[in-house]
Image: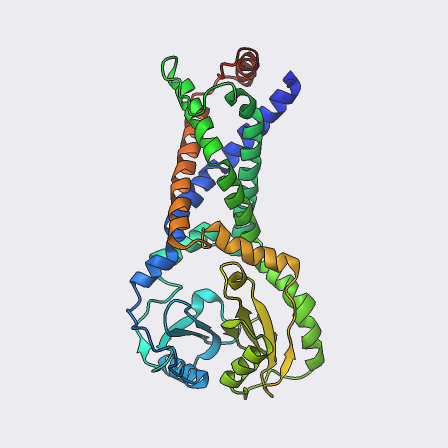
Length: 378
């Protein structure tokens, strides 16, 4: 590698790392408990005994009425099912476009309809960490900013591999040269941990960046596909008397055999336009359960309107969201994700130490050139 090329890669690695390191530390620290968010949430939920396979679920319209009785004056927004417990949740709000931080949640037994005690998803320490992790409490601007930091992190990872990879190959893997200088030992540690976490960090960084543009992608999908169906109802007010929710879900089940409903959006929530129930169906495998297939049901007549296919960018988004937090392999994969997260924190801290103990850029380039010639990385 020529000196000018070496210097260019060094500067790219240096400045992309410096700009994003503090924010990456924040993301790693807040992301660690979020990896186990589902398990932590279940700790605060009541234990619900399993029901017989042939038990008849309670009518969904009755479930919604029970939820609204808990929050008088609200309107229903979403209904969903817990795949691991016989429970149904109902999100309500003051108006159809209520943002998530202002929603209420009622948890009900799927068969008996008993209202179960449950913490609100938009309250508590975990929600605080989630907002800090995703948008710094700044909404879409905060999400886009954090997405930019994730992309800078990806560039820092790749430039680090290009810069130090050829020199690290000259040493036995895992070598930590502690006898020459403390900075050299920290550099070896930084490089070794960087190689160990390279693939994981790159995947998490890129999926994190994708997740930060979830709202624009969802809006694009709603404009492109839902707008086509909304045009048929141009000039018509949002219906105030809705068809049976249970009948709508039954219609969706018949239209998508082999799939199960994950959640239902009510008219006006943004997920299904102003005139439809959106019954979002999912498959039965770890992969297909992440790829929702929407079934649109006319909210006034209960008739099947359409089964629009999700565009590629929405499928990429839906697959990247669980991958970012290691949700595909249940607890074993989450533990692996947490260990790699801790190693990445060590990479970031060692990188900060190396910056504090830095020499001039020219001195570092000279050391790298010497390392290329002698096989002794500096």
